[in-house]
Image (cartoon, rainbow, N blue to C red; front, top):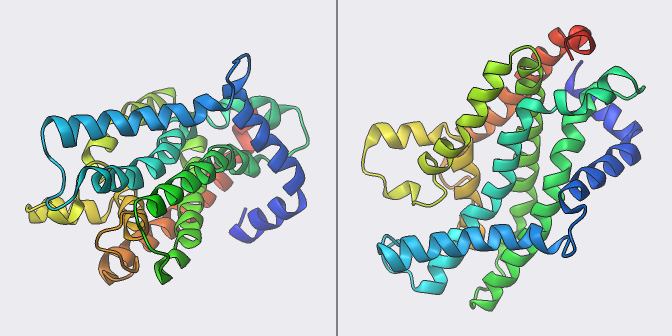
Length: 270
């Protein structure tokens, strides 16, 4: 398998992949009277609880930000995290939870992580529309920096598709690895730049570590556009941007290589 073959496979099977992605997203709303309302309600409650605890409760908001500005700053980190959290939790079991596609149907197995990531990505687009509306309602102006979200979203989708391909292949062979990766989701949230300003960290070693954290990379990138403070291009810090892009590419290449090595025995393992 190569990245080119993966792209060609998606093009040939795009209607089936998109249909599976919509079905995957709809699973979480089945048998619910309010349906899609809960998809928006959960991240909204998440954001409001952290806003109250961090800004109102312990006053840890970034200096100089009002309540609504801090709420927007927080949302610009939590909304991409909502997508990333789903990916971190679901990627280890992406093949085991869709074993019927691997074992029985004539469907390109490499595309399973693609539609599995597209499902939460559809919700991400809707939440991003809400974030954009909040930005303008808070007095934000349309700037040239709004050219960046498509690039940020593409990088995030590509990274987590590669991550899903990588860890999904490995975790099909090791349930212990799957449990370990799922257990790390909560620490990743607290240790990445979701609820704190990465640039305000004084410790040089921690700053360096955060530069290699893709979760922090995407949170910082979104805040460059939507937070309303310190706007700029995501490549204003060339080193941070270069490391982020390198991690995206390396994860995709590694995911393709590992999947190519293990895919032959996947049906037997599952």
